[in-house]
Image: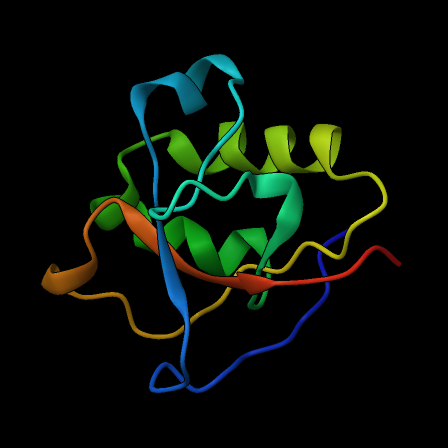
Length: 100
């Protein structure tokens, strides 16, 4: 289940860049090399995020969400609707979290 938690895009955050490996279920890494198991993707829900396919790559969302749920069973998973634009192609905003 994804938890709604829309945040201000101007807050101090890091950007995760998705690689082709994501589509095959590989672990994601933050731009600074932090493993995805150490971060959360903040936001609304997968239906809203589907509108971001132009930025993330068509069909990528479902694979990403499935991978997150599989690998982060004890973490809060959130995807943020923060107005992705041309400056944030193929990426989303993330921030460190602690296990639930």
